Length: 344
Image (cartoon, rainbow, N blue to C red; front, top):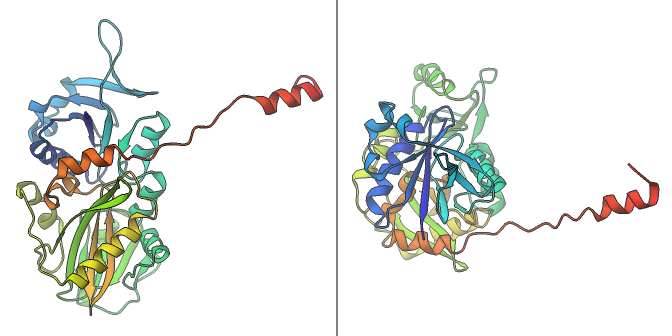
């Protein structure tokens, strides 16, 4: 199975996606192809040896082969004409806008490429934090109380609260507000990234658990359950400045009952449209009850550090991807009208 990893794109999380792809290269024994999408949404084929952060920050990637996406795959131009990039399955590793909002998924589906990642509808629902709450409600999974505010509507939930840009991941723009004097600054930070903000109660010392998985061979393949290290909350630095250096996460020391609740909640979320994706769900545990915090549809380095056999899991997922329904277009309807009424 030959994979090709798509990363980068136009997003506040562009650089995180690069780091994520570099980390993925280190853990896959069968090295995939790497397709970089720059901020101008141009695609480039990157040699494995060039998968280093400064190759992208310096602009050297522009010397790589430029690719064109069209029906059937990615193509590189040459003296003898276009040549198709040979890959069996593409991996959507674009974080944030473009990758997790459904644009990449739509492109890959439109051009008939097989890929690992959330489909268009699942992308839209997990990218917008308010829609994620509605998805959880449909799945029968609890979430914290919340409100969505804008510059025209001030928060009304009692302090302390946590502020999150509505359409952004990686804890960018997130603030914990414990004092009224901190509120204006926290709102200004969040509004740099989105015009709407999700406001939730902040629970001091709440237990958090991460669980990743995918559906292959008709059943969910779970990762270990991780209790991540954190300060007040999992901020940008804690999430992404260390994950690429961790070969394996530590499994949470929890009861069998809590583990079962977390897995049940994950499966309910996954079955609401995430077939074909490897996702990570982040949960809270409050008084023995499980609450969904957020869905990571394209988790950092695809959460490889949570799996005993990550590459094997990818292979099994790639063999179980959903197929688009074939539609036979034969123009019988138009022909029947033409026959009955003459030329249209």
